[in-house]
Each structure stands twice: as C-alpha cells, then as structure tokens.
Length: 123
Image (cartoon, rainbow, N blue to C red):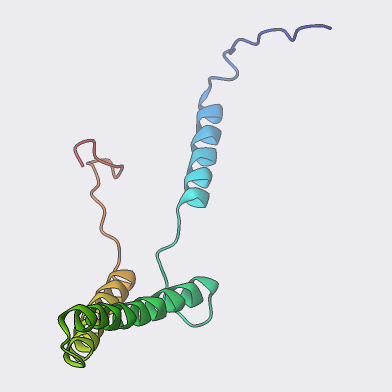
C-alpha cells in the first residue's frame, strides 16, 4: 500500500486569492454555526418550544408552591393556610420568572466587541 506524498504549500496556494477564499469559507462557517436568538413567534418551531417552556415554568411554580404548602400543612397542622400561601407564593414566583424569561428572549443580545469588531480577549 502506498503512502500519499506530503504536500507542501506552494506560492500558488499562498496568494491573495487563496486567502480571500479562506476568509469567505470562514465567514460562511461562522454564519452557519451562529444560533438565532430565542423567538417567541407563533409560526416557528422555536416559538412553540419557547411557549411550552413558559407554560411548564408557570405550572411548575404553582404546583411547587402548592406542594411545599401541603408539606407545611402536613407537619405543622395548619390546614389550609400552607396550601393557600403556597399557591399565591408559587403563582407570584412563576409569573415573575416567566415575565423575566420572556423579556430576556425578546431583547437583542449585546456582545462586547474589540476594536476590529471581533470578540475581546478580556471579556
């Protein structure tokens, strides 16, 4: 079995045309790799996923608050006050976190850039 010969770069490979082609390939690769921001739109799959995430966050907060309130009622014998307080506390926390998550998803991402437009080293 023959081994392939080592190829060494020639002057033809290192000209300006090759560098421009490499720069274009790198730009295309970075554009593919970059993920779009989280969208809350109705017509997209990412919008549906974000909607389900918001719904589960709301339900989880409320059910978590009710569950913790039930535990307090069970051990402290304060029925129904633990469940009632847990319901309101869980509902408030879930609304707060859902609004925060939705506003973060709608806000444009701000990135720190260096003087040439690329990422900074100290970030």
